Every structure is written in C-alpha cells, then in structure tokens.
Image (spheres, rainbow over the protein chains, first blue to last red):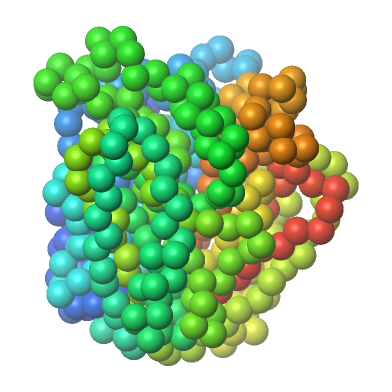
Length: 139
Length: 139
Length: 139
C-alpha cells in the first residue's frame, strides 16, 4: 500500500468564498502515482469546508445567501463562541452544514467523478492563511 | 490490496425520493471478495445524496418536509442557479444538508453496521437516470 | 494492509450532549500499530453524530441552540416518525446536519490534524448506551 500526503495553502481575501481546487487535487493524485484507492480531502481548520458540488457562479451565490440565512454572521452577540473574543461563531456552523471533508474514489489513476463533480474549498472565516490536507492511499 | 468498483443506476419517478440501497451495497461487497477494508458509496450527481439513517416511512416524510422548509423548491426565482435555465437550485442545497457520501467499515466480509443503519440514495432532482458509485478497498 | 476495529460505548446522562473523544481515538490508533492510512470514526446509531470541530464550551452551546432552532424537539407531533411511539424525530434530523462520520488521515502514526481539530461524539437521543465504531486501515 502506498500513502501520499500534501498540504494545500489558501488565503481568501474576503471573509467567505469558494475556490475550485479540483485541478490541485488531480495534481496531487498524479504525484502520488496511486492508481486504485481512496483520496481524502479535508479542511484542517474548523471554520472551513471541503465539499463537492457544481462550479456555477449563481449556485455559489445561493450557498452564500442560504448559509447566511441559516447561521448569520451578525449580530455577533448571537453566538456564545464570540464571547471568547472571536467573531467567527457563524463560521463553525456554516462549515457544519457544508462538511469538513470529501472522500473520492481513485480508479485507473483518476478521480472517479460524475459529470459535474468538482471539489471546493469553502472559506467562512478568511483573510488569513489556512490549509487543506490531501491524503491518498492505495496502490 | 484489492479494489472494487461498481456504478448503480437509479431513475426515481418523482422529483424527490429515498431508496434503500443497502441490499445492493451488500451484493457489491460479496462480489468484491473483500473481508477487511473501507466501502465508499457516493452520489455521482450533485443534486443527489447517499446517507445512512433509518428505514422508516414517517421519518422519510419528516426529511421531505424539513428539507423543503430549509430550501424550498419554489419560487424558482429564489435561486440564482435557476437563471441558468435549471429548476434545481434547491436540490443542490438539500443534497448539501444530507451529504454526498457514506464511508462504511468492512469487517469479516460484512458492512459493519449498528442495529438500524441502512444506506439510502436520496434524490432531489429525479425523473432521469442517475448514478451512485461504490468503491471498496481492502483485503 | 492492516485493519483495526474497536467499538466505543457511551451513555450520556442527558438527551443531548457533546463528548470529546479525541483521546480515545488516539489510543485506538496506538493499539492498531498503523503508521500510514485512514481512520474512520462513525456513530453506529442514527440519532447520534461523530464530527470534528473546536472544544469550546460556548460553541457547543451555540450548536445546541442552533440545532434546536433547525429541528426542535417539541412539539413531538411535528414529526411523523414520532407516531411510531418514538420521541426522537428531531434527533434524526439533527444528526443529519452534524454528520454520521469523520474520516481522518493517519500520518507517521498520528491523527493528521490541523491546530484545533478535535473529534466529538454528538448525542441527540441519550440516556442509554450507544456505540461509536473506529476502523483504521493502512500499514
């Protein structure tokens, strides 16, 4: 069994944003030399997500509006977590909806995806450097 | 290490619905000959889910009502994604709540489940053929 | 390839609660002797979650308030599932938001975590003994 590991770094200029990281994960898979196995991609921070969905700008605006409705950033006093001096209580909840990780099958050296599947980094408390972990195991 | 792959096809007659696919995944596991490992089951489409919960009709009605409340199908104009000509903006959000995938332990040749765990395909934009991917790795 | 399996038992004294189980998972990893691979941790019950977030008391209070808002326990008549004689319809929905499982990379014999990542058992229908499954595969 082979194992491959890489950290990807991101700094989103705004508080929230989505970045298509599919190309970077494909590059990791090529580097790994693994042809059959599983690829785990996870946010290493608890106010960010890795998820799979469509690369469509309107949809991303829908996610933004919807997550703000489910867990609004303000008023900051809504979240006891913000009593610690943070202002990211909402980001922990938004990340819970969108998920921490994606597990993707690796088949014949490729990410085994349906027609529209793309991997995204979802940032909910940006403007600082944060990481995504890629771990691939297989043969 | 062995690797097994199969696509399962579904066509749900209605826009939304839940199908218990546990038996089909068990059949895949038997075909794989894998006794110890991990089984990934994921929707290959971004308006559908694979999730684990109870096979109880009332609960499924609760999911339907609750997801419609969190992300209603109408008005279609609620979703910018629908400006692309689609009418499935809500389906992308519902799938985000229910999740894309389940990872199940394989132990002694069986899906290593608690007493009530069952695997479901969750459709949020049906009436066409869609796929689920089963990937099993192990020995 | 090595495979390790263990069940962890919990009995939460209240209906809902969060328990940091990171130390127990680290203990499992040591017992497994696995240095490189993947660690699956999942609730074996469908009214409980395993998720990764911050070990901060205020945040856990935020989760509690927020989940009660998204899927309130009462009135019990809100959930058709409760017509079966259960009173845990809400718990199935809360667990869907928080997720069934976490998959964690294993690197150099350690859980490969970001700075604040901790694994939690999330109970939404407690006051009885329930299980978490730990399955680790690798080398």
